[in-house]
Length: 398
Ligand SMILES: *Cc1c(COP(=O)(O)O)cnc(C)c1O
Image (cartoon, rainbow, N blue to C red; front, side, top):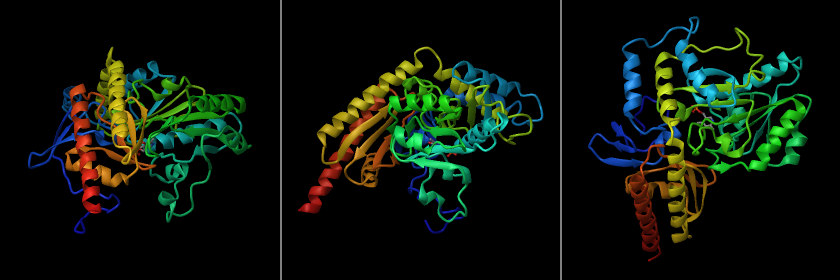
């Protein structure tokens, strides 16, 4: 695609969709694809969920946006839901994950300032992390390919290799303000952090008066079968960044914090023009309402287990193509032995959509509403894709 008016920053597939329903996406010519990537964990309730459509349409007729200089009962309502279902006492609404992370980083730094330790501003981060594409979040993620050519790297992030307690202890200095981690790395290739390591981070943060920040932009909002991924690990953070699934496809992010951690975020210290718009709040509230209904998360866990078992069977059947399956709930990664791009292309030929992750992984991040029959159908297509790959291999060898 050379003839484009867009920044060519994405390597886009030559495939456009015009309609969606549940886990199905449709092209203009009516071809239907089974969507197991869910807009990269964004379409938590699938495409055009009737309750999200109703929430959005209902609000669109009343009021879209008012400035954050006015009282915000619409924000208060969703914030209450988030606070009542989490560790947090305070919420700031954003429009994206990176913005939620920016708020989290500022909150952690400002807490130290507020507590009389302004020299503490650095955050410890981890190899394989992804936190977004703003200047601060590329520095936090620490991936050279995202940082190169954009001028001086934003100061204040100390990357640790591996989930290693000694290295974390060694990285803590007089300027450390907190520790930032994804409980399950998403872009890094669906890599869950060991429970004992997260518990260690909690202890070390308490020992040193640091903020523990969880990036749950990808793994939160029911994705793991628990509302918040941290519940799986039994370790609560001080600050948490949420986005992606919380808006179900509408741009929405949130930074959650305890009262103590957010104490420095006083009037005037942060802001956003669009953050917390009435449209976003209406949709976010509907997402939270559905995800917290009795039985919803249990069903996600059951479907996650089913999909994981089916993917494990695929690995067993094709050990030359696949190495392992990992992840929690409906956040699963299939580690490939062949380049992941070939696997994704073979899947696409079967009209099955997955998404690449680091460490040569194909991610499965379907709508949390995916049915058992749709999981069966997806895996039948994945199996057909695997057979086609092996067939092509034989053809090439002959
Ligand atoms: C996607 C993602 C982000 C960035 O979110 P944007 O909405 O693209 O800014 C940050 N952290 C994690 C873990 C993500 O998966």
